[in-house]
Length: 213
Image 1 (cartoon, rainbow, N blue to C red):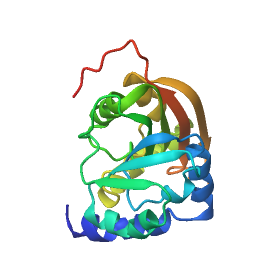
Image 2 (cartoon, rainbow, N blue to C red):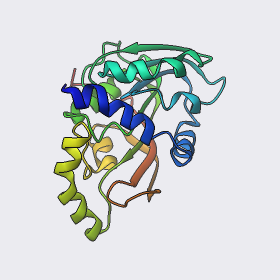
Image 3 (cartoon, rainbow, N blue to C red):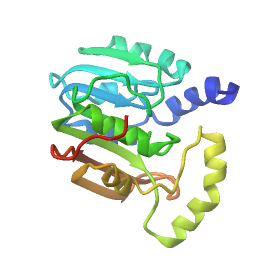
Image 4 (tube, helix red, strand yellow):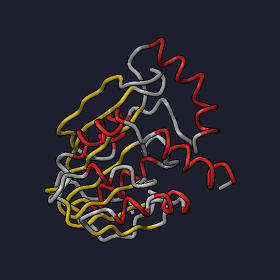
């Protein structure tokens, strides 16, 4: 990582994503999180205040950026549940198969280079009766907005750590072998090219084997 991605960008994201609108989005998405939780793309811990009280026993946080983890320290210390941090990419999760009740991704699937491999890892570590909770931005359904997304994406990827604007999040989740249980697709507050959101949950079918490791 260069100076921009390693030092500056974590502060910019922490500041830009910590507002009332995003607090509401996170709280709604995380309301059903419970038990042993894995969060990929943990960042600076912006989700931590929005996990429902008394439902989470332990959270394992996967995040490659050391500066983001430094910014998360205060939020981690304020938690009433254990938080363990792992400084790795989302494509590699050193946890046992079927070891989590809930896996969480918020504004992360847009950025991970090999998103299929990351989703395969999330599916692998999720228990069959567990849930995958996601809150992401991605490809808008309106042609005019999508055209602008395609135009803006090269700049977006350069400035924001590889962030894509045009990924079809619900399709990626289903292609990874998850079964959608709930899905909301909508424009949130902000420029339309960046604010078409996917909020939902999915499960892991017990009958399908996990091939990708």
